[in-house]
Image (cartoon, rainbow, N blue to C red; front, top):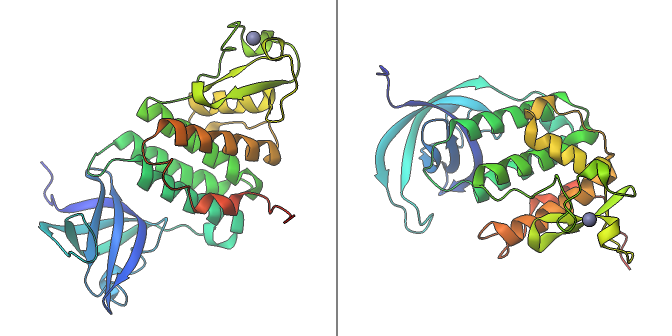
Length: 267
Ligand SMILES: [Zn+2]
């Protein structure tokens, strides 16, 4: 039995101001999962230090009584009373790519994790993904987001099938050519031999291998081989995969994902 049952390790995934001085936060707790809470005086209070900043892990003191603020949220809110920062990110805010990657991971978690479903494996994954963003070079930010998406699809049981061609069932290293053709509606790919006509949306085998390794290895141990632009193509495929296989993603696109993509020339 814990001596202080209302102290929990949490990250803040999103905040918005409420009235003049309060903050409403979407939080992610190791023991409670995703929930919303109000921080009275959260805008200025010293009781919270930097704990209400995004990408910061803190121990929060939580009042378990729920309250309802009709105009602010459909969900019942808990109250956070005070907090102590345990780990604050030093580098994420200094790189546009890293910050975009971290914002994207927060948005993905809010969308993919059902409310009040505790998962220590997802908590560890999230914390390691932030750590990977902090420590790896910034051109790997998009690869880490891809790995995070792939691991979350595994957790939800809707991961793409990457080891074999959907038609001939040959493995990646047995099929001809350097690319394969994704089949979004099947969550799989088809080899060049089974798809003789040229298609524009091919993905390189190196990229498929990166995706495969992303599902097998801890996020901080993945040795990515494919380049940044290739990972942008994988992100495009994964975005469609989520729209197809995870409820809710078809209704609204991910808003933070556009910051990770190279700017498109307007025509
Ligand atoms: Zn084939």
